[in-house]
Image (tube, rainbow, N blue to C red; front, side, top):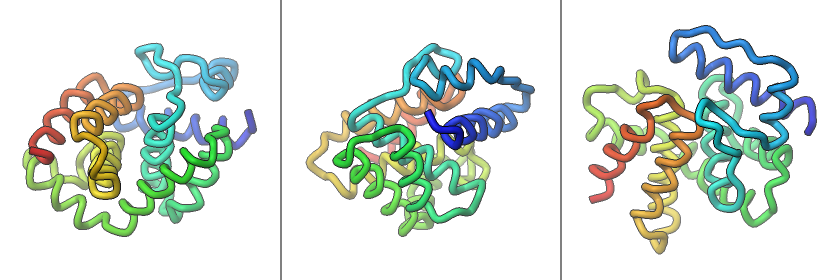
Length: 178
């Protein structure tokens, strides 16, 4: 994998650790293994492929854009290219992330209605962007069953988020998509 992929993964790992208020050190060899598709996160899951991989790329791009304030389109392109995501899935990731970027305030207001204990701005960045991506998919692809959208979002939250991310995302989306 390219060096910039390793940097992107390193950045994401460091920010997630800071959000959890704990120190995290990543050995260069382990970082290269994660970037190369080895198990990611604390649960030993592999990086997803296919449509789930596209959803993951969208979440990663939105996450990075939140912190770097880079336009999300360029971030999606870079991550999709680095992860060798096939064009059909890269297009899916672009659509999801672009929809979120164009309607961020509207989507965040929807999330805020059901997640009243956590204002969207104070929510964990991974959870916030998983929810945003799932809501974008519901709007852009209404033919996708809502149960599938929820299940996919929960799996991505488990991959990138904290131990409670899956439960939080499941509950929030369950309330939003009824």
